[in-house]
Image 1 (tube, helix red, strand yellow):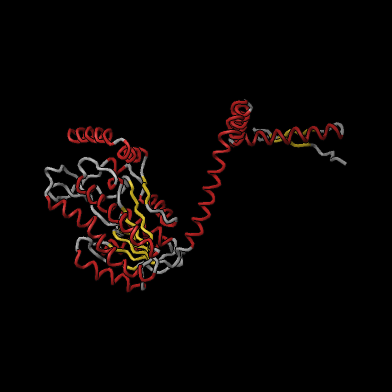
Image 2: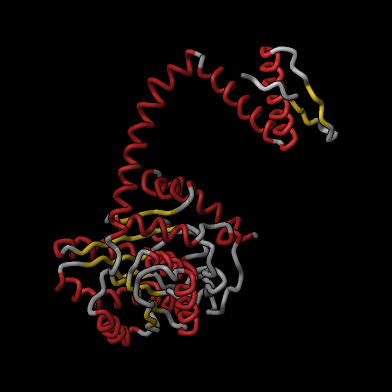
Length: 375
């Protein structure tokens, strides 16, 4: 039996209107109408109704487009056959990445240039993955800051506290002993991240040879010396991974970056050779070539007379976030990639152009040099 009680409808002015049903059938109608009236008034007042209408419009618009034969044909014959395999492939890679990332727990990772920028980002990535990390750079106070931040940000991460090992890549004679110190901390090193370095801004003719030598010493010889000191222990264990952070400028030369580009080209060549020599010992070598990254690299860069550049270039300020570069690099490392380029489309296009149409590449670089000279 339906209730004979009046149905109360709350109006927007706060008053009630009693609706007295004249029959059971009419009572049901009144209940239905008033319930929906309250429902739509509430949702219109809160803005949810407007959002619902917008979503419904989008859905109807999509249905209208999909009803067109040409679109159904494109979806059925081109989009789905191409997109679906790619989606499956990416999903499988994601599952592999999750599995491989779990295996990182307990691995010993040594990171040079870990006091700031990309090196600090690498510290977060590997520490969060449960690795035992050794942080190295010239400035111990900055290394201590990074360790403090790591311990505060990743309190729930079950791993060992980061170990600090100050070293200067330009001090070639001390690097072998520093490498032995690093090996004694945990007994071995699974992954060596050669990241430390300095940049350069200047004209070739106005640059002292001492500046060229200093950039080459830090960016090339320092990494070579450290790698050679660590390598025997990896060969003995038949296991290890050497990662070197090169640059897009290790693949193409850019005006007013001669010393920096030369050092990165040298890195590229050396570690390409090393990869083929140590592969039979189950040792991987990954060369990471990023484009511009938002770090203080340009501020700390050397000029032609050896002074500090002290300027944040617009290209550097608009570059990749170092955390993003570290994450992408980690994926490449876990997948055992030999090299990876992390950059926007223009540097990638220039790399291809340098290989397949060098004369056009040289014309573009010549014009770029004139623009930079007159800037």
